[in-house]
Amino acid sequence: QVQLVESGGGPVQAGDSLRLSCAASVRTFSGYVMGWFRQAPGKEREFVAAISRSGSSTYYADSVKGRFTTSRDNAKNTVYLQMNSLKPEDTAVYYCAANWLGAGSSWSSPSTYNYWGQGTQVTVSS
Image (cartoon, rainbow, N blue to C red):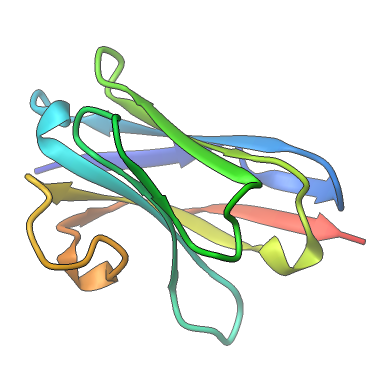
């Protein structure tokens, strides 16, 4: 069983930055592709970013490309989401998720992830 715990969310102003962290309690963290998703009230959960097992490859939703950066530290069992130039439309609960060995055809699909964190709220005011 993998436990994922997100942290770093909070209220910010438009244009500010935040860094989310997701700590995993698992021995084989490097075996997981890690993804970030978000869900705003009344909307479906949407893909934000994903990072390969080694961290050498990253993928982003068009809506965050150029503003958000994901990275990972396999020695610390932690994945990060650096969010810059935040906009009110970025307001959502942010979730990290783990996909064992990167299985599945699309890392942007929530259905390919095996484990999820509890989420952390990010609120961006204008």
